[in-house]
Length: 129
Image 1 (cartoon, rainbow, N blue to C red):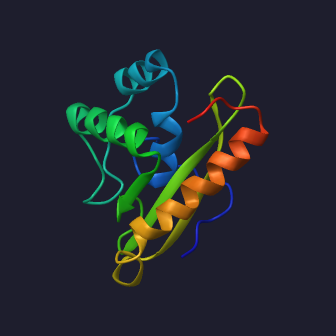
Image 2 (image 1 turned 180 degrees about the vertical axis):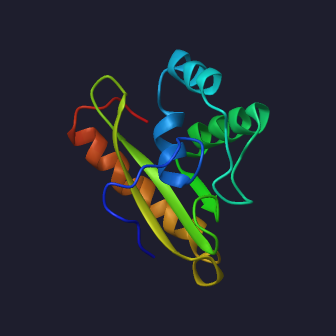
């Protein structure tokens, strides 16, 4: 899986983008949704406000985001944020692979990913995620 350096993607498409968006303050999420067309990047991209809000709540609850071809057809990814001492996202760590091979291990991998991002965030002074 590759992503071209300096590529940009909307915050509602893909695990890494959604993981970042989910940890922003609610007012920032509301502003993003109000200003975004929620355009599809692929046929799997979330394109409705209600679906996005539901997904963001689930991401916050479980600690990580999942993408099943939302930004790139055939790609699967999981992502979790690194947060600072104010609990604001400063970065995201993502693990990805071809969906046909990665989908069976995504949730098991997420356990390790969340443990790692929680520890890094703690070292950045974050409160408990």
